[in-house]
Each structure stands twice: as structure tokens, then as C-alpha cells.
Image (tube, rainbow, N blue to C red):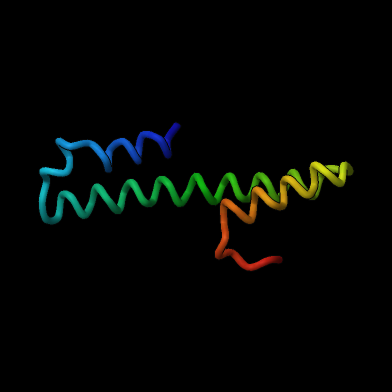
Length: 75
């Protein structure tokens, strides 16, 4: 929900009328929200993968983590 709200803020026509520092701060804030929640989702997928004994579920969790965080190195 937080990611959706951040994206809505970025695509809101009223907010696109802002200029300068205010707009930059809004974009940075929205990007931070998206990054934090995406990272959390990625970590949750990795944790779930490590806790399941089901190989199919494990593979799905690992794949989801890779989609969420494609630039994160494998640990």
C-alpha cells in the first residue's frame, strides 16, 4: 500500500506542477519509500526460502527475491 501511495504521489497531476526543491524532495521521499518496502519484501522472500523444506516453494521464493532485488548480490 505504501508503494502504491508513493507512485500515486509521483503521478498526481497536481504534484507535477511543483518545481524546484519541493518537487525534488517529493521524488526523493517517494523513491525512498519504494526502496525500503522493496528491500523488505526481498528480505522476506529470502527468509521464507531459507525456512521452507518444500523445494518448489523455495524456488518460487528465490525467484521472487531476484525479481524484487535484481542488483543485489547473491549471498
